[in-house]
Image (tube, rainbow, N blue to C red; front, side, top):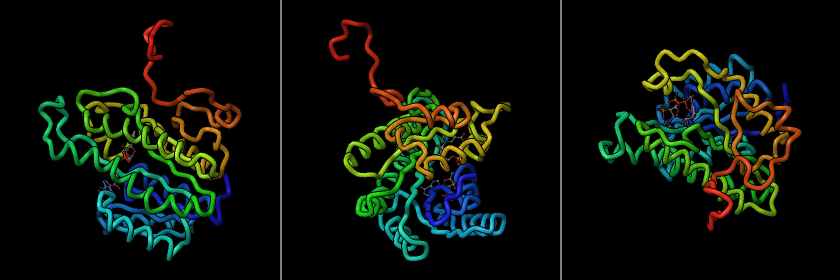
Length: 268
Ligand SMILES: NC(=O)c1ccc[n+]([C@@H]2O[C@H](COP(=O)([O-])OP(=O)(O)OC[C@H]3O[C@@H](n4cnc5c(N)ncnc54)[C@H](OP(=O)(O)O)[C@@H]3O)[C@@H](O)[C@H]2O)c1
């Protein structure tokens, strides 16, 4: 297990599902980990349980990632209590509630889903990345999905959000050129969580991705072992960590691009 002691992580959506697994896995590797979610009671309980199970240091900062003032206050609390954030994991987010085609979707819920992923990530990045740039180190992980690159008609808001989040990662990395700060798209596979349990498409599914695979991938990123994958998409449970460590992606590999229709495509 990589030793990440001395580092500070902030994980959003930390009270359940993948976020909670990440907090536990990072704390077990020695990181001081702050978890953020809206429901403060559930979050505090989860962070206390993780601290007890791992012997690590955790902090609960309740906030809605789409609330600018709340995110700024939460990050300020993390910095005051634990120190500057070296690893930011944008994991919080919602899924389409109604599983209907885009023209039937409730406009408010649709936008709430998009906002939870996109506005949420931009607000945490605004609060955390300037300090990473000043220190010239730090890593941002945006949690991606299969729907980052392929639309699902029942989850149009989520598809839009996850694709936009990948573009946000790429924009962030482009803006960070010349610095040592890195950012990554990490798709977790299909993990058994309250979100996947709520989705009809996963009913009866059994081939779940072990949460440890997500933890190991994010821990390798935190350890600086995958910096050459900055700005690119990696997938827990499918990507082999050793292969990722030894492979440097070229051109636009694992990035969002239009595929040319052939050799004569004028916009290829
Ligand atoms: N599970 C999978 O197989 C899978 C696959 C691909 C991608 N993902 C992505 O992985 C991430 C975690 O998924 P999950 O399955 O673990 O989801 P989950 O079980 O629904 O957990 C979501 C977490 O995010 C928090 N959250 C939701 N909206 C928030 C907001 N506006 N502000 C702050 N916190 C918020 C929730 O707590 P509160 O409700 O208390 O805020 C909860 O802690 C998501 O980005 C999801 O899209 C998951």
